Length: 427
Image (cartoon, rainbow, N blue to C red; front, side):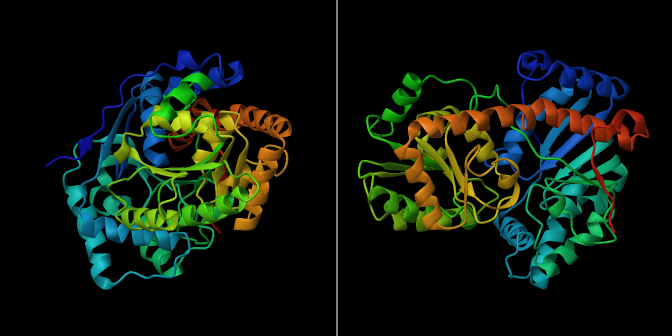
């Protein structure tokens, strides 16, 4: 048994030159030169479903094009393990449920088994999120430098679950978080860094798609393309609040009776809870023919998601917790009027009333959506400002630069990294 490799194909940095600034592209080149030939391994729990996988399908080949030797491998797990890691994920975002001793042992056992089949040696091993975090305790010698990349909101964690993970976190050489507020209050953390994730503007989900092509695609799913549509793209997860989206849509429909709703998600194998919440969402829809609940199981892939986003009069992301919210980034990049929860990294993307709307309740979500539908001209101006903000801040070349800067920092080349990494030293 080996850790499963992910085939990411090829991407060229040169293809991004017309989107990223020349200064950024020059910085990437300068940071990459001292790292030529360095071996990098990314470890994660799944190769599909969710923002981590989407980031890596672009980041890994671009790191390779920059001159590094890069692999991405998936850990092995079974339902009992992923049930535990979902409890850990929810607990780190504030859920009060604690781990039993049996669950803790399940987590340790699967991390040990995965560490035992980790082959090779690397200059940098990047572990994404909690699922593989304890592998370091059994395979420290495999990596010259280990980095834990946290993609979730740790601002108000369940302390018992955080304390369970802290001993293995302490063994890392660095940790990376989306926001300063997510860096845990602990004196055992390694040096921690803060930068947001990013989207790939050239990926099928984000590439330019004409209104006509988007309408053609949506027609295949039964959407009436001559009537308005609002859509939320996200996992079926209590933190994304699809039930609240349905409530808000029903309020908006009192003023806009022709309005349709799309709830578009993906089902990932490391999220067994997703099936339960999918069923709850279907039950909440109560057979309404104007609510379309779709996922990768309905052949909804990246291009189809793109079409839903492009065609929608407004895009929603009514999260009640959010690590960063790349679906918001995608919506803004497509210049779509966006309504999103006032939580997590979403507030770093949307300036309320300037580039979108931030909301904290079903009623606020309904009101903001109605404003977009009532005044499409003003909504369009709002959306164009959002697109430009994403272009400057949240595209993959900037993310690549941040990783190269950190590699230089950990290699002792502090001068190369000084201007592009943000250090947060633990208290």
